[in-house]
Image (cartoon, rainbow, N blue to C red):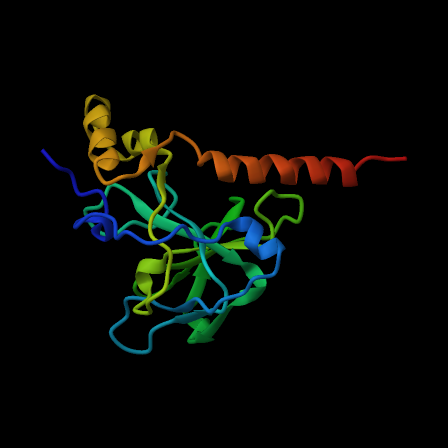
Amino acid sequence: MNRSIHPAVGAGIESRPSTRNIWSYINNQPKPGGKLTCKCASNPVVVTVTAPAAHNHLCGCTKCWKPDGALFSQVAVVPRDRLSVTQNQGKLKILDETVSIQRHCCSECGTHMFGRVEDSNHHFFGLDFIHIELSKDDGWPPIQFAGFVSSIVESGTDPSELDDIRNQIRGLGLETYDEFSPELNAYIASRASDLSFKNQVF
């Protein structure tokens, strides 16, 4: 039986060329992203992104915002300085200020608009997490992998279903991980190395 992974993969993954990744931001290769709009019927919160999204992926963790009935969220990252709230910023609230990634959501409809890291020593500092399904614009990258797959057990999925769910996701042409992809893990390692060097006392 097929499960509801996420609406964006209901009809399979659209085939597109490989997209830019996190290193493109370092190399300063900007490309307009688009607008993200919350679910409010009137006076929605609108976020504008003016850079390409990277590492668009499915996430099974319990913190990320998921559509009703979906086992996974869809998350990508963009440079923090290329994201701005362009309409109804006053409706945003931080869901939980105690966690590393502070998720800014609409106080009326509950939609998560972006997640931001305020700790300059965190490996994702400088990047914002977004849900590109909130955009009607074309040109966003396709979903590239599924991360934290086993975490869906924390949301109520029976552990005995995990193998079938992984096979279903692989049938879409996506690899599954219980962490981030190797590319994102390499970025995290490089950031940790940089921060360790900067914090040394000479």
